[in-house]
Image (cartoon, rainbow, N blue to C red; front, side, top):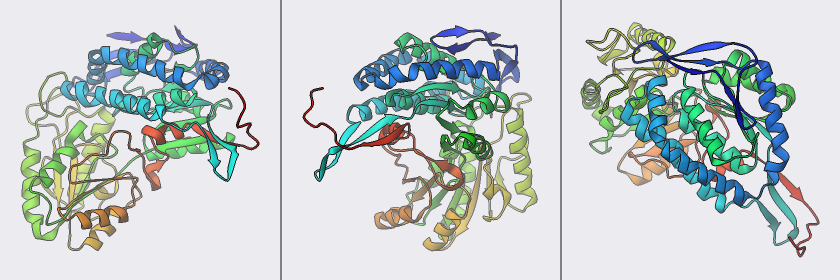
Length: 482
């Protein structure tokens, strides 16, 4: 069993102030795979103090030097790819092939996109031709508390840490206690890249003690959090005491609108997208809205596709989905499947319990419900497991109304071969992102939502901007020497 009982603070690995141990459970086996320490308020104070001390020099470090360190980090992170993948598989149950590609790869791709964006970012620019001596400056926001989830750990760590570092911020990262091991490898990569002491700090911990100490700390200038809407509300309330800047990337209940003229692969594609990462994605297309003319056939297609989704041990190579992260999530998902049955939805694939032949591990059957109405619990709540709900609709207007009838607003999807209709519907959907006909957003596109899916944007130019304050300087000496 691994033992990770130290935190990375001020450029070195240090022992915690007090013993608060936490077992990390391998969700494929239900056995402990590591023991970590959880940070106390004293540990948080030490990490924040290191970040605060490092901030003035790091903020004034030329951006070219900050970018060069990120590029060095990228080389080291690439060399540690297998270590990262193995850690993610063990701690949160991403199948090994997925961990090697999408899970590790998300961190690599986001970092590359940030480097590209940073090199053309207007850090200082004139207000306009009418006021050439008024300069608009993007200045680092300060010391940042970065709190990341377990479901796409490298995705979220890179979106926060790399953007903050390029912007000139210093930081304290608290990864989820469910998936801390990959974050500690990330810290080793940051150390080996040569970031100055105190710029990047890591403490492991829980929300109740560590997270609360971080988000309420008087010397933290910004909180960037990814996780549940419930936790996001609590963090906002805690941070409000000192008027911190708060960035939230929260839950979702995405609608996937399949029109009658959608391409023949649209339904199967939607099912496979839903089941990816065992349904543990905030931007999952969990509500499939299907136009009535093709609804019956779509239900058959979706059920058949779900029945063919293999479920297996995350440590095994191959195309399959793994377990959900822990027992609490497994129980929650089972409860919502039962609620779907009780409320009258038609179960057409999967259902309660583990897949046949499995008697341990937090494995869930790939499940599809048909004849769902948008007022049912399974259409309202984020299930965060491999469970798809199918809802029929008649008209474009009805589809848009159903899609928008949710407290969330992260990602929606549109499937139609009518380009004008696709564009029209995309503009009507109340979400931070829309993807159409299986086409993903481009590298560096902003990620984030509206309503109870949060605020702010991550990735590319927008991700860097989120870690800056805008300063206006009048009377700038335009002709002064550097």
